[in-house]
Each structure stands twice: as structure tokens, then as C-alpha cells.
Amino acid sequence: MTVVHDNCGGELVFLRMRDTHKHNWKAVCTKCYSKKGSRKMIAWASERQIDLIVEHHPSTKLEVEINT
Image (cartoon, rainbow, N blue to C red; front, side, top):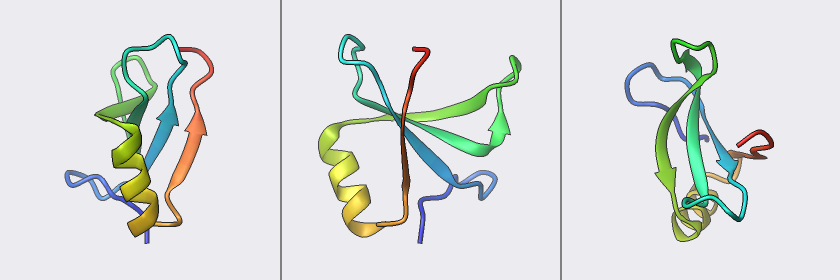
């Protein structure tokens, strides 16, 4: 089971931010897109929140954000 976006039902992917970034992780939807055409950001997440998400939803996708 994965984490889904409440509005559209799309799967959420969690992107690891660079160490210099203020936030650790951000959640983006795989179905929703911003006006610029990139995946829509849904929320910020801390390391503790990611640990809990992975514990309860082991198939959740985690990726590294390269261009931020």
C-alpha cells in the first residue's frame, strides 16, 4: 500500500532535498502537475515523518531531488 493524494487519488512520491535546503523531504503527486509542467508539490516532511510513512507504507517511493 502506498500513500495517496486525497484530492485526486494519485500516488505520492517523497523527494529527498539537498542538505543545504531548509526542509528534508517533499511530497509530490504523480497525477497532479503545476502550471510549469512539473509534478505538483503537496507537502513538506521531516525525517521522523518519513520513518513513520515507510514503516506503515513500505512500498512508498523515495527519490533524491537533483535540481533543487
